[in-house]
Image (tube, rainbow over all chains, first blue to last red; front, side, top):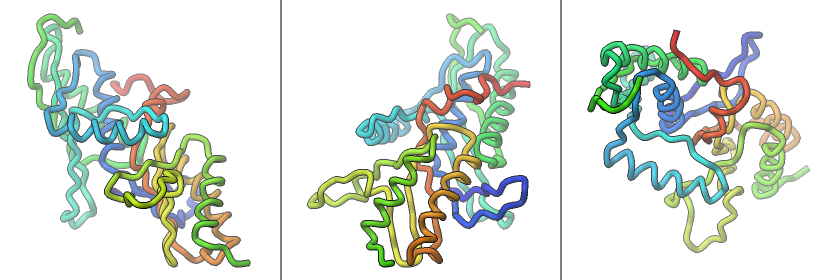
Amino acid sequence: MLTIDVADTAGAVSRAECVLTEPVIAAIAVHATTTVAGVVRLEPGLAGLAGSLARSARQRIKGLDPAPTEGVRVEVDREDPAGPCVRLEIDLVTSAQDQAAAVAQAVQRAVTRAVAGATGLALASVSVSILDIDPGAGG
Amino acid sequence: MTTSKAELAGILLTVLKGVPGLRTATPSPAQTSAGLPWDLELLAVDVEDDLVEISLVALALPLPPLLRRAEHALRSALDDTEWAPARLRLIVTDLDAAAFTARGYPERFES
């Protein structure tokens, strides 16, 4: 879990502690990744799938539709003297019509912007692993 | 005026229903007891003597203005009770898919 600063630009001090859990950050990152041209899909892995099934079931009880988080791992390093560092690892499949390195860089930029815009958090790093290239998918 | 913890939880839930873009979160099974009736809404609010903690799902982005609105509304409700000096902790446990289709959220993030 991560505490975020919600103070407004007028300088009003927040008297509440506002905390985000890792799935919130992962969901924003997944959405931003899927908007990048050349990304075919994210690869969740078995651990990601199991975790998301339990999470989905809980929220569907209340009629909510949880945003997907599969394919993004969120690590929070609390040992950093400058404060908690958030690192993201993203596993994805790209299209054969796009240059893999360029797609990965675009994903890093898009995710960094999306997380900062939606939460105010500055990410320490975004690592992109291209697990496969889909020859059949268009860019 | 004396307010019980259960009454306060109910008041805070009512206040939250007036804050668009936020819903109370369903707690994980580990947080619930099998022998208790499952009022899922109430389980999202934890009232201690010096801390009021509320678990939330966000249905809109960005989160800072949303949480500021919730804080303002909840703090106003707390100020009328003996929990006025208590700390307020808002935990966003999940994000609903509707947050990305809400008006104003960018469709792309590339430059």
